[in-house]
Amino acid sequence: QPEICDADSTKEVIEAVRIRKGIDKIEKCLVFCPDAIGFHVNREFPELIKEVAAITDLTVPLSSVYPPKTPVCFTSMFTGAMPEVHGIREYVKPVLGCDTLFDALVRANKKVAILAIENSSLELIFREREINYFAGESDQHVTEKCIELLKQNELDFIVAYQQQYDDTLHQLNHYCSEAQDAIKNHVQAFKEIMAAWNEHWINYNRLLIFAPDHGAHFDKDLGHSNHGDDIPEDMQVLHYYKFESRGN
Image 1 (cartoon, rainbow, N blue to C red):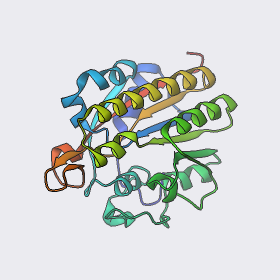
Image 2 (image 1 turned 135 degrees about the vertical axis):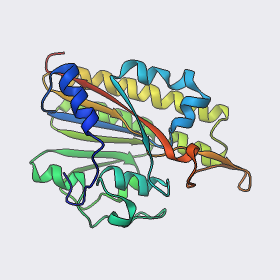
Image 3 (image 1 turned 60 degrees about the vertical axis):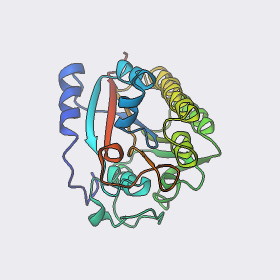
Image 4 (image 1 turned 180 degrees about the vertical axis):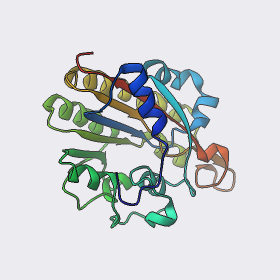
Protein backbone atom coordinates (compact mmCIF):
# COMPACT_ATOMS: atom_id res chain seq x y z
CA GLN A 1 0.00 0.00 0.00
CA PRO A 2 1.13 3.65 -0.31
CA GLU A 3 3.59 4.81 2.32
CA ILE A 4 1.24 7.57 3.53
CA CYS A 5 -1.87 5.38 3.62
CA ASP A 6 -3.75 5.53 6.91
CA ALA A 7 -7.10 4.25 5.60
CA ASP A 8 -8.69 1.01 6.75
CA SER A 9 -11.91 1.04 4.75
CA THR A 10 -11.10 -1.95 2.52
CA LYS A 11 -11.41 -4.58 5.27
CA GLU A 12 -15.14 -5.00 4.66
CA VAL A 13 -14.54 -5.56 0.97
CA ILE A 14 -11.68 -8.01 1.52
CA GLU A 15 -13.77 -10.03 3.98
CA ALA A 16 -16.75 -10.05 1.61
CA VAL A 17 -14.58 -11.31 -1.23
CA ARG A 18 -13.19 -14.11 0.94
CA ILE A 19 -16.55 -15.21 2.34
CA ARG A 20 -18.71 -14.89 -0.77
CA LYS A 21 -16.32 -16.11 -3.44
CA GLY A 22 -13.54 -17.86 -1.52
CA ILE A 23 -11.00 -15.49 -3.01
CA ASP A 24 -7.93 -14.77 -0.90
CA LYS A 25 -6.03 -12.76 -3.49
CA ILE A 26 -7.18 -10.42 -6.25
CA GLU A 27 -4.98 -10.77 -9.34
CA LYS A 28 -6.43 -8.03 -11.53
CA CYS A 29 -8.44 -4.92 -10.73
CA LEU A 30 -10.30 -2.27 -12.73
CA VAL A 31 -11.60 0.95 -11.14
CA PHE A 32 -14.30 2.85 -13.05
CA CYS A 33 -14.47 6.47 -11.85
CA PRO A 34 -17.53 8.46 -12.98
CA ASP A 35 -17.10 12.02 -11.74
CA ALA A 36 -19.76 13.43 -9.37
CA ILE A 37 -22.12 10.42 -9.32
CA GLY A 38 -22.79 10.89 -5.60
CA PHE A 39 -25.54 9.48 -3.39
CA HIS A 40 -27.75 12.36 -4.52
CA VAL A 41 -28.15 10.45 -7.82
CA ASN A 42 -29.50 7.41 -5.96
CA ARG A 43 -31.95 9.64 -4.10
CA GLU A 44 -33.14 11.77 -7.03
CA PHE A 45 -32.85 9.31 -9.93
CA PRO A 46 -32.91 5.80 -8.45
CA GLU A 47 -34.22 4.30 -11.68
CA LEU A 48 -31.12 5.54 -13.55
CA ILE A 49 -28.51 4.10 -11.20
CA LYS A 50 -30.22 1.03 -9.66
CA GLU A 51 -28.77 -1.29 -12.29
CA VAL A 52 -25.26 -0.70 -10.96
CA ALA A 53 -26.24 -2.19 -7.61
CA ALA A 54 -28.09 -5.01 -9.35
CA ILE A 55 -25.07 -6.19 -11.34
CA THR A 56 -22.46 -5.78 -8.59
CA ASP A 57 -21.91 -7.74 -5.37
CA LEU A 58 -21.36 -5.15 -2.67
CA THR A 59 -22.43 -1.54 -2.09
CA VAL A 60 -20.42 0.50 0.41
CA PRO A 61 -21.56 3.95 1.61
CA LEU A 62 -18.66 6.34 2.02
CA SER A 63 -17.98 9.96 2.78
CA SER A 64 -15.90 12.07 0.47
CA VAL A 65 -13.01 14.07 1.90
CA TYR A 66 -13.27 17.81 2.36
CA PRO A 67 -13.34 19.81 0.23
CA PRO A 68 -15.21 17.50 -2.17
CA LYS A 69 -13.31 18.63 -5.25
CA THR A 70 -12.15 16.15 -7.88
CA PRO A 71 -8.34 16.32 -7.42
CA VAL A 72 -8.69 16.33 -3.63
CA CYS A 73 -10.97 13.29 -3.65
CA PHE A 74 -9.08 11.17 -6.14
CA THR A 75 -5.77 11.91 -4.44
CA SER A 76 -7.21 10.62 -1.17
CA MET A 77 -8.73 7.61 -2.94
CA PHE A 78 -5.42 6.61 -4.51
CA THR A 79 -3.14 7.40 -1.56
CA GLY A 80 -5.36 6.38 1.36
CA ALA A 81 -4.46 9.67 3.06
CA MET A 82 -6.34 12.78 4.09
CA PRO A 83 -5.83 16.08 2.24
CA GLU A 84 -3.68 17.55 5.02
CA VAL A 85 -1.30 14.62 4.53
CA HIS A 86 -1.09 14.39 0.72
CA GLY A 87 -1.19 18.16 0.29
CA ILE A 88 -3.97 18.77 -2.26
CA ARG A 89 -6.61 20.80 -0.42
CA GLU A 90 -8.26 22.75 -3.25
CA TYR A 91 -8.96 22.50 -6.97
CA VAL A 92 -5.39 22.32 -8.26
CA LYS A 93 -3.72 19.74 -10.52
CA PRO A 94 -0.04 19.41 -9.59
CA VAL A 95 1.91 16.24 -10.27
CA LEU A 96 1.89 14.50 -6.90
CA GLY A 97 5.22 14.02 -5.22
CA CYS A 98 3.89 11.77 -2.47
CA ASP A 99 3.64 8.00 -2.60
CA THR A 100 0.46 6.67 -4.22
CA LEU A 101 -1.23 3.37 -4.94
CA PHE A 102 0.29 3.49 -8.40
CA ASP A 103 3.80 3.69 -6.96
CA ALA A 104 3.02 0.76 -4.65
CA LEU A 105 1.75 -1.29 -7.59
CA VAL A 106 4.90 -0.54 -9.60
CA ARG A 107 7.01 -1.69 -6.64
CA ALA A 108 5.00 -4.93 -6.69
CA ASN A 109 5.86 -5.34 -10.41
CA LYS A 110 2.28 -4.77 -11.51
CA LYS A 111 1.43 -3.26 -14.89
CA VAL A 112 -0.85 -0.25 -14.52
CA ALA A 113 -2.79 2.15 -16.76
CA ILE A 114 -4.77 5.34 -16.17
CA LEU A 115 -7.36 6.27 -18.80
CA ALA A 116 -8.84 9.75 -18.51
CA ILE A 117 -10.00 12.81 -20.41
CA GLU A 118 -7.15 15.03 -21.55
CA ASN A 119 -6.20 17.70 -18.97
CA SER A 120 -8.52 16.25 -16.32
CA SER A 121 -7.33 15.82 -12.75
CA LEU A 122 -6.78 12.09 -13.09
CA GLU A 123 -4.89 12.58 -16.32
CA LEU A 124 -2.44 15.01 -14.69
CA ILE A 125 -1.90 14.51 -10.97
CA PHE A 126 -0.54 10.94 -11.14
CA ARG A 127 1.92 11.61 -13.96
CA GLU A 128 5.68 10.88 -13.94
CA ARG A 129 5.32 7.28 -12.83
CA GLU A 130 6.29 4.09 -14.60
CA ILE A 131 2.75 3.33 -15.67
CA ASN A 132 0.73 3.71 -18.87
CA TYR A 133 -1.26 6.88 -19.54
CA PHE A 134 -4.03 7.27 -22.09
CA ALA A 135 -5.64 10.69 -22.53
CA GLY A 136 -8.91 10.52 -24.45
CA GLU A 137 -11.00 13.21 -26.08
CA SER A 138 -14.28 11.93 -24.66
CA ASP A 139 -15.80 9.39 -22.30
CA GLN A 140 -16.51 7.16 -25.29
CA HIS A 141 -12.81 7.13 -26.16
CA VAL A 142 -12.06 6.08 -22.58
CA THR A 143 -14.59 3.24 -22.78
CA GLU A 144 -13.25 2.01 -26.11
CA LYS A 145 -9.63 2.15 -24.97
CA CYS A 146 -10.46 0.37 -21.74
CA ILE A 147 -12.11 -2.50 -23.62
CA GLU A 148 -9.16 -2.66 -25.99
CA LEU A 149 -6.72 -2.94 -23.07
CA LEU A 150 -8.83 -5.65 -21.47
CA LYS A 151 -8.70 -7.62 -24.73
CA GLN A 152 -4.91 -7.26 -24.87
CA ASN A 153 -4.72 -8.61 -21.31
CA GLU A 154 -1.31 -7.13 -20.55
CA LEU A 155 -2.27 -5.08 -17.48
CA ASP A 156 -2.99 -5.85 -13.84
CA PHE A 157 -4.64 -2.61 -12.72
CA ILE A 158 -6.69 -0.14 -14.78
CA VAL A 159 -8.33 3.15 -13.79
CA ALA A 160 -10.94 4.47 -16.23
CA TYR A 161 -12.20 7.99 -15.51
CA GLN A 162 -15.24 9.65 -17.13
CA GLN A 163 -16.65 13.15 -16.68
CA GLN A 164 -19.75 13.83 -18.80
CA TYR A 165 -22.06 14.14 -15.77
CA ASP A 166 -19.71 16.51 -13.95
CA ASP A 167 -19.24 18.63 -17.07
CA THR A 168 -23.00 18.87 -17.55
CA LEU A 169 -23.86 19.84 -13.99
CA HIS A 170 -21.29 22.64 -14.01
CA GLN A 171 -22.71 23.98 -17.27
CA LEU A 172 -26.41 23.50 -16.44
CA ASN A 173 -27.48 21.60 -13.34
CA HIS A 174 -27.26 18.10 -11.91
CA TYR A 175 -30.89 17.17 -12.61
CA CYS A 176 -31.62 18.42 -16.14
CA SER A 177 -32.36 16.03 -18.99
CA GLU A 178 -28.80 16.37 -20.27
CA ALA A 179 -27.47 15.38 -16.85
CA GLN A 180 -29.81 12.39 -16.73
CA ASP A 181 -28.56 11.33 -20.15
CA ALA A 182 -25.00 11.56 -18.82
CA ILE A 183 -25.88 9.26 -15.92
CA LYS A 184 -27.33 6.77 -18.38
CA ASN A 185 -24.16 6.95 -20.46
CA HIS A 186 -21.94 6.29 -17.44
CA VAL A 187 -24.02 3.26 -16.45
CA GLN A 188 -23.94 1.94 -20.02
CA ALA A 189 -20.16 2.41 -20.18
CA PHE A 190 -19.79 0.53 -16.90
CA LYS A 191 -21.87 -2.35 -18.28
CA GLU A 192 -19.81 -2.54 -21.46
CA ILE A 193 -16.57 -2.48 -19.49
CA MET A 194 -17.90 -5.13 -17.11
CA ALA A 195 -18.70 -7.43 -20.03
CA ALA A 196 -15.13 -7.10 -21.35
CA TRP A 197 -13.74 -7.48 -17.81
CA ASN A 198 -15.61 -10.75 -17.45
CA GLU A 199 -14.67 -12.06 -20.88
CA HIS A 200 -10.99 -11.18 -21.10
CA TRP A 201 -9.98 -11.52 -17.44
CA ILE A 202 -11.95 -14.73 -16.88
CA ASN A 203 -8.81 -16.68 -15.97
CA TYR A 204 -8.00 -14.41 -13.01
CA ASN A 205 -9.43 -13.60 -9.61
CA ARG A 206 -10.66 -10.13 -10.46
CA LEU A 207 -12.24 -7.03 -8.97
CA LEU A 208 -14.27 -4.27 -10.64
CA ILE A 209 -15.16 -1.09 -8.74
CA PHE A 210 -17.62 1.69 -9.57
CA ALA A 211 -15.96 4.50 -7.63
CA PRO A 212 -17.19 8.11 -7.91
CA ASP A 213 -15.42 10.91 -6.07
CA HIS A 214 -18.15 13.24 -4.73
CA GLY A 215 -21.71 14.46 -5.29
CA ALA A 216 -23.26 17.80 -6.24
CA HIS A 217 -25.88 20.40 -5.38
CA PHE A 218 -27.53 23.35 -7.10
CA ASP A 219 -25.90 26.70 -6.34
CA LYS A 220 -28.43 29.51 -6.70
CA ASP A 221 -25.72 32.19 -6.70
CA LEU A 222 -23.90 30.56 -9.60
CA GLY A 223 -27.04 29.56 -11.47
CA HIS A 224 -25.80 26.03 -12.04
CA SER A 225 -24.81 23.01 -9.96
CA ASN A 226 -21.51 22.75 -8.14
CA HIS A 227 -19.72 20.83 -5.39
CA GLY A 228 -17.17 21.61 -2.71
CA ASP A 229 -19.29 22.16 0.40
CA ASP A 230 -19.45 20.09 3.57
CA ILE A 231 -23.04 18.99 2.95
CA PRO A 232 -24.53 15.52 2.36
CA GLU A 233 -25.29 16.24 -1.29
CA ASP A 234 -21.59 16.82 -1.97
CA MET A 235 -20.02 14.44 0.53
CA GLN A 236 -22.04 11.21 0.38
CA VAL A 237 -21.07 8.60 -2.21
CA LEU A 238 -21.62 4.90 -2.83
CA HIS A 239 -18.94 2.58 -4.18
CA TYR A 240 -19.98 -0.66 -5.83
CA TYR A 241 -17.79 -3.78 -5.98
CA LYS A 242 -17.98 -6.75 -8.32
CA PHE A 243 -15.59 -9.63 -7.71
CA GLU A 244 -15.22 -12.91 -9.50
CA SER A 245 -12.99 -15.96 -9.25
CA ARG A 246 -11.04 -17.67 -12.02
CA GLY A 247 -13.18 -19.40 -14.60
CA ASN A 248 -16.41 -17.69 -13.56
